[in-house]
Image (tube, rainbow, N blue to C red; front, side, top):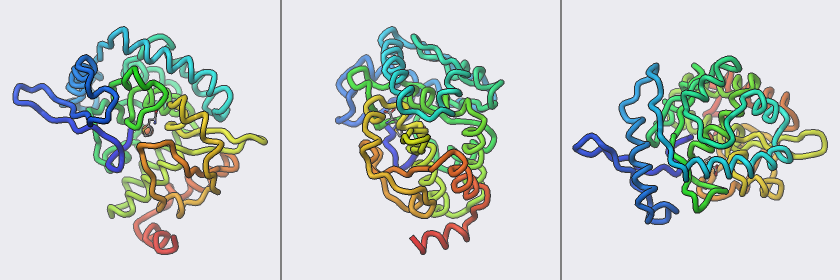
Length: 294
Ligand code: TIH
Ligand code: FE2
């Protein structure tokens, strides 16, 4: 999940303690009362959650488990073809269920011996600062609902498939987990809204939508590409630019479409050298300077 500039359905608290998720008219689930009831119930689980408690259990319907199975099946073949090897190895080590949606608590348990990352349920939009800074402590905010069954190949709205298949598998790699933690430390270190936005954009163009050279091929490591079996077929045809922190930190993107500008790391070492180093050392002053040179 992510924030602000992103596509997030507002969650409203009702007087009786329940919550209502406001889906846009254009949302594929807008006119589906069963789906809307599910979204409200699931958002209700995360409201009032405090860290350290067990994550509330979401009881998914048969139809919801089927969406997970379908997407898992479609993605498995595409991952073999298009995902970086570090992701494939991590996914193998994590061993997510294929035929049912796992509980977030269960995913945390699977991650525990690998990298120690833990999930925090989120009802909807999490403030930018909060979302990123807890990455430093190996916490990851996650939605629990699943995309509407009519559009399984892509959603502009982060859902449990994106959070768990995209981010969870990545967070099972110690090498990737270290980068997530560095992004968190950077978010905690910077003070201005401009600097925080810059840090979050570098995250967007790397850990969400990054691509990487592996031998002669271009592979994906960004969770947003790896959770969409529609978008993953398209990334090689996009405008692929060299990895550059200043450009990534200032490029505007549209969350509702397939990303048409992507940044290529020449190798994992290159990603760590450029982006890892940036997050490890950036501060308000450095970012203010970079923004003027953009
Ligand atoms: N587009 C992704 C998917 O379909 O799985 C979800 C998102 C990733 C980043 C923002 S929204
Ligand atoms: Fe995400």
